[in-house]
Structure formats: structure tokens, C-alpha cells
Length: 441
Ligand SMILES: Cc1cc2nc3c(=O)[nH]c(=O)nc-3n(C[C@H](O)[C@H](O)[C@H](O)COP(=O)(O)OP(=O)(O)OC[C@H]3O[C@@H](n4cnc5c(N)ncnc54)[C@H](O)[C@@H]3O)c2cc1C
Image: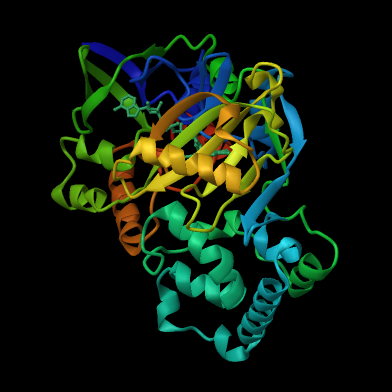
């Protein structure tokens, strides 16, 4: 039986960062089931194009992890000012919608501004500050968006966009994820964004980083370099936390002292032989959506936009981006690459009809003139893409994490921790998990 000090399940950014920190300091093994490292942060080559698993932009916010990521990329990284937009009512307006109503028709603008001001004045009322029984539980999205943004912004953007993205009833979706991702403007910013100057520099991702060459996969490739404990093509089928053993498909048993899991929490617990029934039941109730990404290589694209949001039902996709506008090395000269994201609740997507609708949608918003411009395509599927925030999740996670902690197991990363997070956060959690092991915590 193979023995290791720390077994890391998964070689995405969380697992690779943990390993990079342990390298040379502690014995470890990363078991990654795919034949390449990087998890979701990989780049696939096809017909002269390079496609990511949808737009994967680095939103760096913490000094230590920013340094770690930029050091790994060793100069292969550009800092780019965001050009993100929203397409609604046959018009483009800058993102975020709530702070940039300038591009919307007059009636939509006034409905949104009036609704926002009404919601704002209600929120200011002293009674709204009193504890309300419903506030003891996480607030649901439909209530939150109307309370914070008012009817107009909710109706024209927040509700239809989030319904498309989450594929889960918004009256049951809770809002713990909103704070970093949904910026809330002040009244004067809403008014200026509608009738005065544009407030594009608003929100968490006004500037982002992206590798100059190689797509986002360049980061994982750089991190994986010189990791002596990285083993590709090894799938962990089950673990026993009491015995400190993992069963690896076509390989055998590995015994470990410490465990870092980065695979999806629900699958990890289902494969944990000694998890009590109450923990298995809690994990079985965790929900997620599925995202299909249609990547297209195209000629003669004129738009300089990085990505756009599409709240309206007539577009099957919730977001579409042009990756060559942040790295022109992703396509042959004169060509561009699109990534188009369609979410489902897990149901299989009919790719042929979705593709026809996507092409009609790209024409309707003016991103392409005709299907004749398209030169390449690649569908990619992300089975577990966005974890669903609901009351079941809020109850399940403390139970599961208490039990894992009592069994000296760390479960980290976007899916190991079961949260809406981003690449830098996976890196951060990987480094922190490894530091705890080195410190003997
Ligand atoms: C549509 C979409 C767009 C996104 N856009 C951005 C963005 O623009 N910017 C950003 O910062 N973040 C973005 N993210 C989030 C980003 O992808 C993640 O935060 C990050 O890549 C997660 O890294 P991770 O290591 O935590 O997980 P993962 O990348 O999921 O890595 C987990 C690894 O575990 C492996 N694995 C799973 N089960 C097993 C097993 N049983 N045995 C062995 N190996 C296993 C998997 O193969 C995988 O390699 C986006 C996510 C999605 C879904």
C-alpha cells in the first residue's frame, strides 16, 4: 500500500496551490482524475484556436495570492480594464445594469430609477432596521432584489438574468453569495448612471488579469511545473477517514495522515465510507446547476467588448464573451473566439437546437452578421458549475464541516467548500490548507 503524508484530491487551482506550498516541506500526493492539471481553469486547443472553460479572468484582490499568481505566471500576464455590457431592449448599456441605465429606453430608465429610489427610501425607514423574524434566516433573492434595487431593476435585469443563470426558483435561492458579486450603487450613482456620466468602474471586477499567451490554462501549467507529487489519471473512488485510507481506481489503496479534498463536496461525502447517515443525508441535499459553454472561432468580429450579460428570454445564453479581446493569441490572425454560456438545472441540452438559437442571438445583438463568419466550434460541459444557495445548504454545511474537522479533513476550493467563489479564492484556500499542515495545526 502506498503511503503519503497528505493526500490532495484534485489538481485544480486549489490542489495545485496546496501542493506548491507543501513541495519540499512535507510529503504529499495529488490524485487528479483527468490527464491534465487545472480543473476548470484549463485551455483546450482546437483548429488553431484556444478555448477556456468559458471566460476565466483573474480578479485579484489579496496581496499574498496576487503575488503568488503573478510570480507563477512570470510576466505572462496582462492587466486589462473591463469592457462589460448588458444587452436588453435591443440596446447595449455598460455593466453593471443598476449603475448604468444610460443605454436603456427612456421608459425603462424612469421605471428603474423610480423603483430604486422608492426601495431606497423604504430601506431608510427606521422600521426596516428592526429585527424581523424572516431576517434570522438567509433572505431569499426575490425579496432581496426588490428590497435593495426596487421593482424596475429587478424586473428588467436582476430577476430574468438570475433565473437564467441559476436555473433554480429565485424565491428559494438565498443571498449569502450576493455581497461580492452584485454591487449596490448609491442613489446618486443610479441617477448619474441613467442621466449623466457613465459609472462603468463599478463592482468587483473593473480591472482583471489574464495570461498574455496560452489562455487561463497557462496558470495551472505554471503551478504544476516541478510538482513531484502530482499524479494524473488517478480517480479517488472512496475514502475512509477513520482508517486514513483512500481507494483509487485501477491503482489500489493509498494511506494518508492528512487529507485535503477539492472535489465536489456532495460526491466526496457520498464516497466517504464512514460518514454517518445524517452527514450523507445533508450532503445529498446539496444542489448545483450545469453550464454548457459553446466556444466559437469566428472571422471579422468588430466588437471590442470583453463580455456581455443577456437577461432576456429570447437569448438562450445568460452571458457571452469575446476572449480574443483580452488575449489575441487565442486565435489565428483576423479571427476571434466567443464563449457563450447556457445553464440548465442538470438536464441535458439539445446542442443542435441550442447552437442555432445562439447564432440567431449573436446576430440579433449585432456581435456577428452571419453564420458564415464562424470557422470553428467546441462545446464544453461543466456538470457542476454554480452551487445553489438555499436554506438546505445553509443547514447542511455547518454539520458537514464540523464532522470533517473532527476527522482532520479539509475540504476546500469552489466545490470542496461548496460556494460561489473564484480562482484566486481557490488558490488562497489551497495555500492556507497547506500552511496548516506545515504548522501541524
Ligand atoms: C462558468 C464559470 C465561469 C467562471 N469564471 C471565472 C472567472 O472569470 N474568474 C474566476 O476567478 N473564476 C471563475 N470561475 C470559478 C473558477 O473556475 C473556480 O473558482 C476555480 O477554477 C476552482 O478551482 P478548484 O481547484 O477549487 O476546483 P476545480 O477546478 O473543480 O478542481 C477540482 C479538481 O478535482 C478533480 N477531481 C474531482 N473529483 C475527483 C476524484 N474523485 N479524484 C481525483 N480528482 C478529482 C477534478 O478533475 C478537478 O481537476 C468560473 C466558474 C464557472 C463554472
